[in-house]
Image (cartoon, rainbow, N blue to C red; front, side):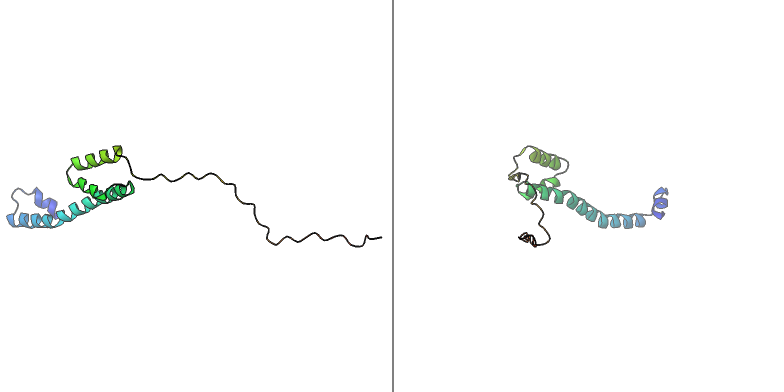
Length: 112
C-alpha cells in the first residue's frame, strides 16, 4: 500500500526509487527463471517420450518464435515411438472352488 502511495506522489524521492529498482532487480531474475523452468520441463518430457532429443526444448528460450517452431516440430515430425501392441480380449478364467473336489461317494445300503 505504501508503494502505491509512493508512486502516486508527484516528486518521488530518488533514494526510494533506487531501493525499489534494486529490489526489483533482485526478484525479477528468479521470476524469469521459474517461468523458463515451467515452460522447458514439460517440453523436455514430451520430446523424450516422442523419441526426439530433449535438448530441443531449449528452443523455448528464443522469445515467441522458439515455442512456435518447437510446436511445429512436434506436430509434423515422425515420432520414433513404437506403438504398444494391442492385446486381444481374453475371457476370464473360471473361478476355482474353495475346496478340492472329492470323488462321488457310492450309495450304501441298497445291496441285495
